[in-house]
Structure formats: structure tokens, C-alpha cells
Image (cartoon, rainbow, N blue to C red; front, side):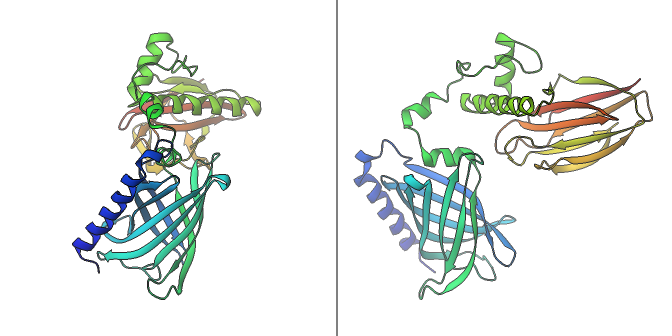
Amino acid sequence: MKSKTQIVSYFVLIITFFISFKNNSASYAQSVELEGYMGVKGGELFNYKLELEAISTDTWGGFAYTYEASKPNNAVMATVTVKRVPSENKFIIKEVELLSNNGFKSKATICLLQAEVFYTEKQDELKGKLVTRTDLHQSYCAGGTLTFIHADQIKRLLQEPREEKASLQTNTPSEKGNVKRIGSPRGIEAHAKLRSHFKDQEQREAFAAAREERKKQREAQAQPVQEEITEGKNIEIKIKNDTISFFIWDGGKIDYDKVNLYINNNKVLDNYTLEKKPKRVIIPISNEKTSIRIEAINEGNEPPNTADITIKDGEELHHILAYNNKNKYSEIILIKK
């Protein structure tokens, strides 16, 4: 177990390296946090966090933390270096020395981690294999995988120039994206509604791009483009059968959106995390009007909370995109013909 003085000295050393290379740092991220998880053979899964400072072009140093999601304060802390290999879209992560263990327990992973993670633009994640070895003798402990999924953190690691990033955080309407329609309002009204769901311009553009990609995918598959619903903008659908199938999933990048689903005020899905695979709910129609309410529990990693929905009424399909801020909801009213 290292003393607080030793830990501080490691940090001072890292800052010293950073200052010495400051003049070469315009094109890479100077300060980075990466949060993800490590899966170890044998079934163990832990959260993994890096706090890094740049020490030269494509090289960072700092601290690594391994902990259980339910016990974030019980963490193993180690010094770590990260090196980027741009030609391979690869990052080499190597823990150098264990500093402390604040109550963390594991079958095999209280060891030094070494990993090579690769960036894939399609999934927008960093992922690769890891091995862990003992601190003193470098004996093999365990193997597994290491994954980082927060797109904003990864983007900072890949880093466009700092001045460009600052310019993206303005609150002016986008001049790039074709943001014309959210629940049908246009022009100033559309921009105002879009701003209500996001904190900054970068998030607005990301959502607009994701929505456009959904549209292109559906058109490529010769499927109807979705209706859009959000808080204050609901939809009525006429149906003819006594039972319908309701499907809900995340049709974009998985960012762990959670929803509650209510049928006529009865909760049928509780704190459900949207997945790539559609969740099917069979809904019997016994009233002239049936209410389906989709409530946003969170906004995932990329706001707002976004759910793809298909309602199957016999051979007829209705495709819907519901998006909301936290604790808000969209509603679908089924009207029996």
C-alpha cells in the first residue's frame, strides 16, 4: 500500500512531464477521462476508469481505477501509461504500479493490467483484449476484454484541436444539419424544440445525424420512415384487431436508455434498458381507446432518451420514434375501428 505522499509524487511527476511537452500538445487531448468496463474470464465484470494527462504527442500518463459498479469507493488504484498507434487505430494501455486497494476484492484481477484496445468508428467504441499480471514477478493472472463506450470521452482522446471543440459548444442553431422537422414544427420553432432537449450544439448535431441515419436505413430497406413523438406531441393510430404486438428497442447506437412502459396507466415494463433486439409486448384491446405511454427514466449516454417502436396490427405496421428528456413521456393512443 502506497502512502499519500508517494501518490502525490507520482501525480507531480506526470504534471512535470506534461509541462515539459506543452508546446507539442496542440493536436491531442491534454486531459482525458475514460470510463468503461473490464470483463475477465471466469465471469467477473468490473468498472474501469482512467484519469490521464498528456506527456507527449500520442502518450498519456495517470491513474487507473478498478471497482465494482455497486461499490465505486472500493477501488484498486494504479499508475498507468497510454500510447496511441494512429496507423492502427490502437491504444496500448499498461498499468505500471499498484498504489492502493481500498477494499476491492476479486478472484484474479488485483494485478497489473495490460491491454490493446482498438477504435471502431461504426460502434464508436474502444475495445480489445487484456491480460493481468502480478506486480512483482509479472506472472499471469487472468485474461479478458476491456471496453470504453462513452463517445464524448473517446472523441476527446482522439481529439480535434481545442479551439474547434470550443466553437462547437455555442448555443446558436446548426448551419450544417438539415434540422427541419421534430414533431412537425419548422424553422425557429424546430430549433427551439431541439435546443430544449440538449445542453450544447454538439449534442444537437449528433442527434440530428443519428435520426438522419435511421431514416436512410429504413429507406434502404424499403420501410416507411417513422412518425416522431415527444413530450406534447403524441399520436393516434386506428387499429382493427383485438390484439396488437408492440415492439420497442434502440435502433441507433446503444447508449443505455431506460424507459417505463404503461398500458392504460398499468406499468408493464419497469426501468427497462433498451437493447438492439426488440422487446415484444402483446397488448389486448378491450376498450375503444388504449393508451400506451413511454416514459424516459434517463437520457442514456447521449441525450435525449430515444426509443424505436413498431406496432403490428395484423399485417399492418406502424413505425414510431419516441424521444424525451428525463422524466418526460410520449403517448400513443390506439383507437379501435
